[in-house]
Figure 1 (spheres, one colour):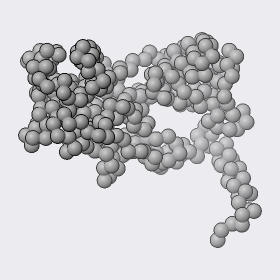
Figure 2 (cartoon, rainbow, N blue to C red):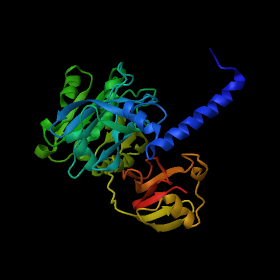
Figure 3 (cartoon, rainbow, N blue to C red):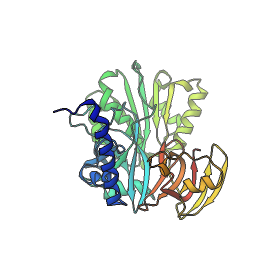
Length: 363
């Protein structure tokens, strides 16, 4: 039986009152916290995903198959996704290229992670991630993708984990490309990520694969690339790998007058120093304050004269959510540290977040 229209506002207010009373009864936890335990992938609480499979690729690389929560939007092959994972009490965010086919029947996505020396997140995911682990997700983004009208001749130049966005493209679109050359560099054959799959595509005639093993043959330079691919000037080119390789390719393509035919994806390192308190910069207003590790950024900003958005004192939650442009903040409720770099798009609640090192707040 449906309640009369006149009764609906009353029922709505009653539900709100019951929710408030429930939150007061379980403070510092709220009912949403208990729902997270039952269904961490539920909608309305930030996008998350659960690792369902860990697939070894090489000695130092694994593919993580992730089932995203409700709200995930299909990606474009070549794009990347930001992954948030808690490592030793610190929430770390990193970007990884999506390597899976789009619209998998089981709704899963996949990223492939290669452990790098000193890499906090990459080593954690490669050595310790297991099925069942829940990670934070953002929607896929990035412009390192194939155009809707496929080029007649394509060149992919990759090194190390730079093969990951290209594999995403190949898995989804190799059947739409007529002439594909893949030049990939790795230290030795056994360290070629997706080596078996790439060699199978070459054996089937889908691609021409050129493997360069730097430990045996030295690093690839533009002269060597030109010798390997004499018609590179005729090819639309996508390149991903270490900065020195990409810098040399950009200079070479510019010298040929073909800069617009080279598409580059750079993997950005993320290394932040965290601690108790630090310099908080409110970048729009130009205010800089020293904030301790116990004072919410909302209070630090207000004390310095920054007009801080907030509905907290009126019982309106999430009115104080603002972008963390870069740096690190600590959640005063549970001690979790959230980090960000320029362009990450991380949002934080200033009423419950304190500086955990230098941080830049977009206000």
